[in-house]
Image (cartoon, rainbow, N blue to C red):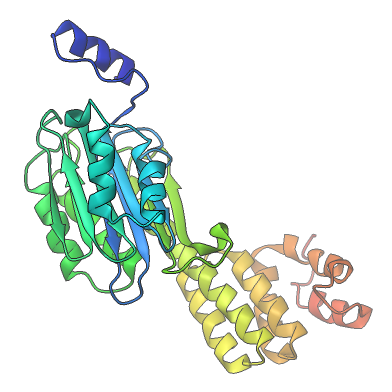
Length: 330
């Protein structure tokens, strides 16, 4: 059912109308600050198509916001703007709520870079609805199958080990075990940013992943988080190579390949990085494995010198391409 249909039903029933531009993103979510690293994050799942662009808003060094129920998306960017200007999360949320005549149909949570938390569940949110705050985090949910959803999320987040992304996922998965959204599942998203901005907002985002439409959005989101971890490890390996720390680089590349064993491209670029940095003996078996699995990578080697990504040496190109299985077509 679309938000326009729901709005029409509300009007027919005599309920006070909400602003017509409000999507009905009934959902469960979490905002949090990692006290160890200072990272900020938000995660959400809903029976709503493409929930990621609507509910979570996160900025390095500033805070995280989730805006849901009958959503006024403005709470996201405006909440970040107020926290960026120096307001705490409670001050920012209070300011926005006082200006919103439809606050009773909103559900909003915020955490700032100092770990201050604020949350609001309007009296007119569809049951079961509620929130729970803890040290540096808030979980919130509406239109849930039971009132155990958000307590379970809080308990799971507090018990979980690992980095912030892992703990956010644990909270979402706990919600689903308690029945989650009464309508079912459709989309999910997670955003985690660094503690301090680096001047390039796109580089501050450690995780920025969305599942737009899936029968099992949380399982798919967890898969994507694992894949993202693999690429982060490969990036760290490249940095170690550039810093002339080859043993560290080899360890990082191996971890990346173990996390994503089916991603041939990770192995290819790890092999390229090894080869051009004097680790030819370790690179050649990886090239051999890549070419055996997907011969399409063989001709790419000859294209890399033009971009400065491989030695402009026909002999070295031939040595790598010779790792292809004899008779393979490419």
